[in-house]
Amino acid sequence: MIRNAGHEGRGVAVAGLLLLLPALGCSPADDTIGPTDGRFDRADTAGDGIILEGLDGTTCDPATCTEACAALGYPVGTCVDGACSCRPGAPDADGDDDGGGGADGDDDGGADADPDAPLACPPDPGDGCGPSEICGNGSDDNCDGRVDEGCSCVGGEVQSCFAGPPGRRGIGGCVDGTMVCTGFEFGSWGPCEGSLLPEPEVCDGKDNDCNDCVDDLEECRPSVICPTEDHAAPLNWYGLHCDDFYPEGGADCSWAVVAPAGSATTGAESPAAEDTRVYFDISGDYIITVTIVDPYGRTHVCTFVVHVRGQGIRVEMWWNETVSGDSVSDVDLHFHRNRPSSGWFNADDCYYANCVVNPILPWVSYTIAWGYPDSPATACARSRCPNPRLDIDDVEGWGPENVNIDGAHDGDLFRVAVHYYDDDTWDGPADVMVRIYCGGTPRVVYGPARINNVSAGTGEIWRVADIVARGPSGDDCEITSLASGSAYDIRPDASRSGF
Ligand SMILES: [Ca+2]
Ligand SMILES: [Ca+2]
Ligand SMILES: [Ca+2]
Ligand SMILES: [Ca+2]
Image (cartoon, rainbow, N blue to C red; front, top):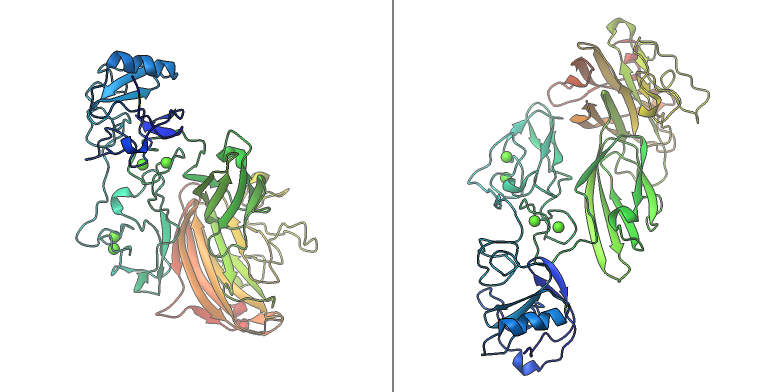
């Protein structure tokens, strides 16, 4: 005999499975005994969707319960605390079909102290907050929201970091960001940017709350598949397809992209299209959020990070990041093979006049001959991929301009400089940033360094850094800032004949 059932057909949570109970009709007055002590025992007072109920204050007849559940299409009917509980699936060893062998006395599906919880998850790692900050580990050890606060560092240095509870770092959806040491010889760490922190668990195939357990919810059959992270190469398009995130199809997707500092990418090509793409013009971490409206009108939000990394040694330069408006200026990146006697603007210097392979600037030809073999054409999405190479000569602001060299030999030396070619209609100084990667890892960020222009073609030169290639493929390096004291090395245009 089954009465006093749930008020309406709805999904209910039992042992991590979804039941859709038909409306059986009930008296609200009967629905008075709700979950207490975390125990679901009677009616649906709390609106939690628990289950087909037995008779208030009476016993549940197991045979009747099984029969009634079978009539409703559920193979299992079990009396729990006097209530009849219908479930899909075969009963397990202890007859409660919660997937375990022990007693699931509270019939809550295993979220509390059950020895037979249905989800086989490792122990929660916990937040791991400690009493004091530990320097140099990129973690917020004392959980005050700041990473390596009070720790000294060398200006320009880049470190991986995680701004959330240290115990959850690197687990599930929790992903490191980066932080940069600001200042010069005795710098301090800037904010940790780009890390993905714990979020409330949602049903999406991902461990959102970083407790080392995916979708640990009482009711979850994910219709959305949300990745944690992906990897891609710079100077490439990256496809965004709604069906990858909602495999059933028929959903509407919209896309938001947060690009790293220095990128000119403003977002997806068609932010409201089911299938679109985004261009990665610079290395770094791109945070992509897709908002999915499924065919049933439900909204799901998925955020993940794409780590964009090039190989070899890569130098990126951009300027006047905070300037708005359409005033243009022309700042150039120079990459020298360390021939101190030759000065700049010559065959030892990879720059706009000799180092670009770019079909939209046909008057520029690539004439560098330093003896490094070409990389596969796919490495630069162009017909030819020489080394070193300047990806683009940006003459209208604000960058990025990128120099790459793959396959440098252990011990090869390079020097990086920036020249203010023309302030054009901007008519102001340039505040320039330079970031250097080795083997795909961001190693230093220098700037902003302010340089001035005199007239077209003549402006100040910033000697940025020396690089020593390390390792058999030049994927590692040592970088030395050329700043002295607390000032960058900025000299007049006439200094171009010297190193
Ligand atoms: Ca801290
Ligand atoms: Ca720390
Ligand atoms: Ca989780
Ligand atoms: Ca989840």
